[in-house]
Image 1 (spheres, rainbow, N blue to C red):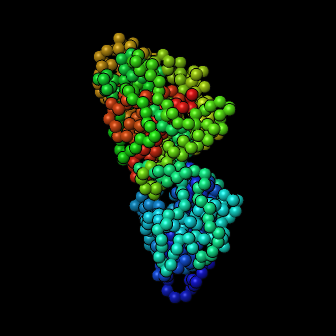
Image 2 (cartoon, rainbow, N blue to C red; image 1 turned 120 degrees about the horizontal axis):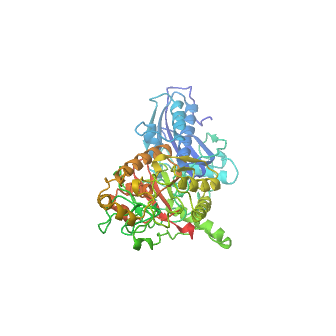
Image 3 (cartoon, rainbow, N blue to C red; image 1 turned 45 degrees about the horizontal axis):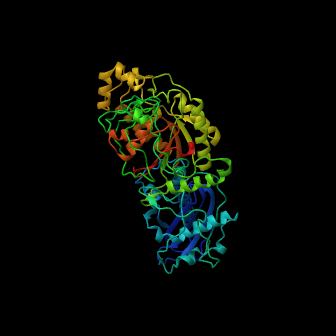
Length: 559
């Protein structure tokens, strides 16, 4: 690339300003970047670069824009000093060395950017998005060109004129839409030196989806918490899935270890609903979006109390559930709309990068589920029943419509691995196994109903109902221990899947623990969650440590 009005061999080294940006229309979605090199003294546009990237994440596009801008500056003067100005706080903080780079897609790009100029010659500054409109417009022009099957051309670009720049001044007009995350194919780059050629006005950046409000700590892209990296669930929020197959009459479904609202503790992961005590959340502020869920004490795999047994898990009520063949197209469209809504970033700044989004799927029913029996990790390890397999197929169809899940991780137990396998076959993904997602070990209570435990081990049960530190009879696992295990698993998976959407196939107790920790709620909150077999929930984790509960106990796909 050559630069208009620049001669790198004449006179002392110059100072440039590089403004760069990137965007992704979807999560992931078609993406592009834009970069402009300015003379620091005059504000004159010396070079522009833009490229359509195919399907990649917003953060990848931003990094690609940075690299292109630095390379353009180096071609103008390899001895120059450069001030990089970007509206991505993530990129600015990471390249400044103040934030760690954990995402595997970001590390090589950051290293590539650092190699363009010698250390110490480049500084980074965050600017509001309204002040980065030139690069933003270039990125949108590249995406528009890609949508037409073309390459961006400097001869038709109006980005420089649209910004109203004059002698270093800039207006505060906002640029085009950005969104999404993901990884994918890339196309060849097109960049050019120019001072701003006139051309046709650029079409709207995102014609297919309306802009969504942003949520605290969220990124700026519409996604599916249930299915795509940094995305949100298609079917809107409901209540979170439960784990126990059995439930004692005196306590609610999932065998959890926190005192219930009425003074009693929910039955453990009785194949119905399992609540979980456990470690305190270290995450920052959280937000429950779009109607999180059902109330009432939690229970293990089943809901032990008779009154709870009759309660249906609250579905999200969102469109997008599987329907008859005559309405499948409308249902799929509703799935997409709901996914964008639930995945919208919230009210926080859009510069935190795409979150790691965990779509939490409780396994389908086993023969123990309707019997409301404790079914943890120390029992018979039942497989899915015919009803459970049908539920898994329906989940798979719903997630396939959403199209956003990038990886699948499952508990090592048979019922979760079988559920995950059915979904993975539909999505064309592999299943990784994570021991930290297993259900609580209910010791000698495995396979028993709540009433049977009450009759045989009354003192142990009372102690267990009173404290999350108490263990089931026979050396089972306390809910405090389960909580600590799930928190450690969460941290490990967030680091491994930063910026991506991952389906975690687990059980009542772990799923409720993910939600409780995200909300910073006390152990007794576990008794106020209703979790159904094959239900979907979602939690997003952001770069600043914050978490957002985006979906809870959604069962609309089962109707």
